[in-house]
Image (cartoon, rainbow, N blue to C red; front, side, top):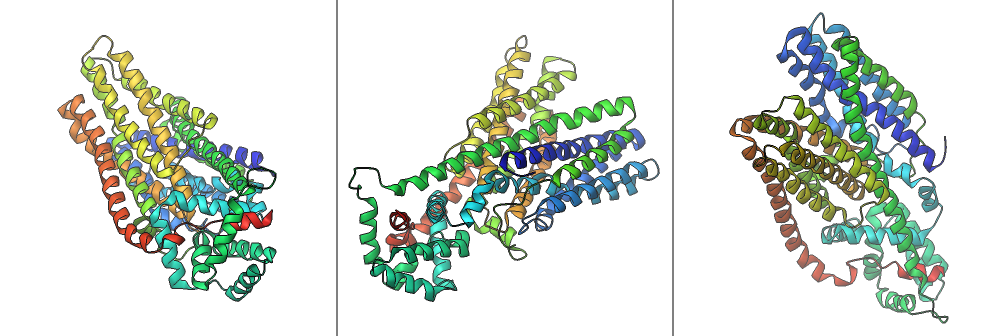
Length: 539
């Protein structure tokens, strides 16, 4: 299957099947363990399946640098299916043996979640990735500039430092000849050199053209070129230097729409997987339902083999670089903090639903209805974001999403003073919480896509996904401790976690900005590479 639309269809089909099996397997493990050996066994099996998600950096490396993700993902899905089926067969004999098998199955979990998501950007790009490699230098340079502007002063300083440390690119001699020719007005060589630098260095070259020119002593010539690029043409038309920006905006909207679609696959899977397990557990038994999730994983493995080659990939980064990257890269660090904090806060939603039902004297099934509305709100938000994708800086979108999630978590407080209307108010509140959660998830996917370096996207996605699982587990445990204090306290504490997360992000951004200000002030002319020289000459 070829073409972007075909690749997206394959991706969605494989993602829904694999993630439905993943979500259903956790519920089936709890039901099967409880049926065979009691609640403690159910909790043990669920933990055994979820804890291995934390090995994201190791699992993600299997994908990084590969242009054909299908075989690796298919092997991961088959691995997951084999050990889930083994756990179902071992459970009647040995709970410990089943736990070991589920732990082995869970090692493939990061590829089902974050690893698979990391491939979506290249699939959505489709032929555009091939066009970039074929030499559309003006669009490449415009994209590089816009990415650097969105990343802020931290990215500028880091790139400049890398340029000063590493020196000129390997073909510097050729580049210098190109600059000498530029002073003689032989523009085509300059265009070729600019394109080759970007293609050789990827994101590392985003800030290098002006910095490299400054060291080579060609800045005055560039200044003259910039004036010619920005001046109106003789016909009065707008300079063509603005066209690549429009193309970049179109690509950005397409990527954001794809990220909303990915969030939709998670929402559908979280609804379909447990529902299918519930039906199978009633028709067969919980152990049989656990084994049935393995069959769904095999279906996903067959589908994912049809994923197209990734149009956006780079060489794998060195071992250990991703964990260091999540700490040293300011945008990724703040995105990870937002992911942990919001996951911890939103994990309390099932316990809030249970507390609201208990406070009103409603049956326990009312909590399930509220959580169903939570899922419906998430699905509606994902559909809306597919139709109208998010726009703007990913970091700002993430911060806004955390704010909205915190406010939405406070909404159930409105149901407490009105017992008679509490069900309706609670339903609306949980719909809003689900919508906020889905929008925030789409924003974090955009941030991971934007700030992940070439050759490390799968590990970044898988690692952050594993951290999110850990944050959710922490949130459930903490909410269980707070729940006896009443629904109002539980709701307030959950929203307070979002507030604390925002405070940490704000402090981090302020510190990073103060550190970057002296460096950017010392080299003002090299803050953002100007692509207009290239685009003007291409005209």
